[in-house]
Image (cartoon, rainbow, N blue to C red; front, side, top):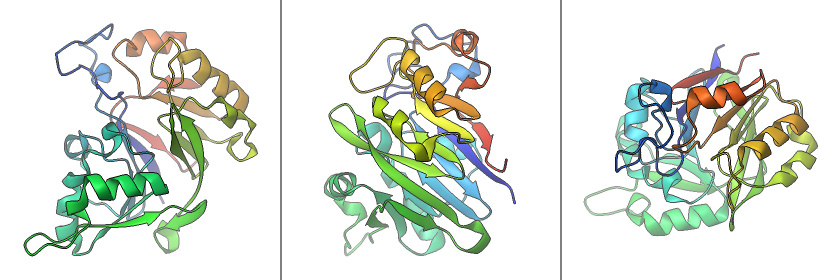
Length: 258
C-alpha cells in the first residue's frame, strides 16, 4: 500500500511572497520559493489525515488534487495553523458527518471559542466539527488504512505545540525546543520534518544551525526544513545543507513506505 506525506505549505506566517509583494531574498523565478502557510496531509490508503488548516488550505487542496479528508490534527492555536478551519465545510456535506479534529486541550478550547459556529448547532447551519483532546498515543482509520500516532508537547515561544510521530516520521513545524534531542522515541527515524524559520535565532522558532543540530543528534535518514521565511531562498539554502537534509517546498510528496 502506498503511504505518503504531502507538504501542503512550507512557509512561515507571512508566506512567500508576503501580502505586500515582497520576496525578500527569495528568487521569485523559482516555483519552490512560492510558499503558502504550513500544513501537511498524511495519506494511507483511503485514510487522509490533515495537519493544520492554514489560511491557504483551499488552494493547497486544489493544487494537490486532494478530494478526500478523514480527520484533522492541530499542532497549536496560532492563526497561520488554524484560520482556514471553515474551509473544511464541504467535507461535512460530502461525508454527511461531522469532521473529527484533534489537538491539545488549549488548542481545542481556543478553536471552540474563536470558531464557535463550527461546533454549535444552529437553526440554519449545522455544526461541522467534532473536537477531541489528543492522547499521548492514538490511532486514526481502520484495518490496513490505520495510522498510529504518538505525541509530545514541545516549546514554541511562550506556548506549547504538539509534535506528531507516525510511520517512522516526526512532524514538528513550529518549535524552538532543543530539549527534544533527549527523547529516545524520535531517534533514527526515517523522516524528520522540522521548523527552520531563518538563518538567525528566534524566540519561538529554530534557526538553521539549531535545526541542523537536531538533525545531527536525532539521526533521521532524511530531514526536511519547513516554516521557511522569505529570506530563505531554496537554491541558496540547499547548497548549505548536508546531503540528507533538504528545504521543503509546497507540494513535496514524501514516501513513507520505506
